[in-house]
Image (cartoon, rainbow, N blue to C red):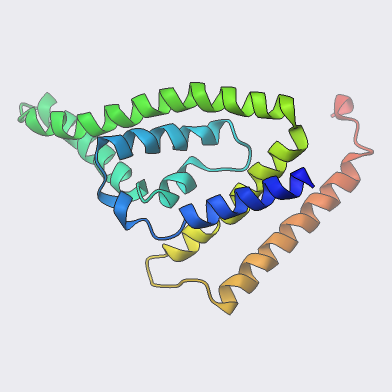
Length: 181
């Protein structure tokens, strides 16, 4: 019962957070810091992509653009260009990195404690977060495609195909002796 509740809560949180995020897309340095802290959790949580988390938060395009501009500004400084663009873009990049460090150390402790307390409920919550977050890439496709019958069928088909492949691999892996490979 507790596992089902954790899964439902995880799905609802991810589904609503991965909806429209126009408020966050411009974002101040606090938003950038938070995005870094959240995105780095992808290193710890299985099955979650840091890029997906940045898409959900509406920060993916901003951060990839800012990083490219920062690198370009650094290369111009090396060749004698102005330093003011380095400071502008560098502030955002450094804030993101600092957020990543804070997130790395806090998320790892939270996940470890949660797994120690109730591993099954924690795993149900984490899987539900991934499933609920699938809303983000679908709603943010550049050509205007959102949730439609075709998209839902494609997602369901991909999920079934992935599950079948996983089950087949699991079936054959039972007899596989990795020491002989």
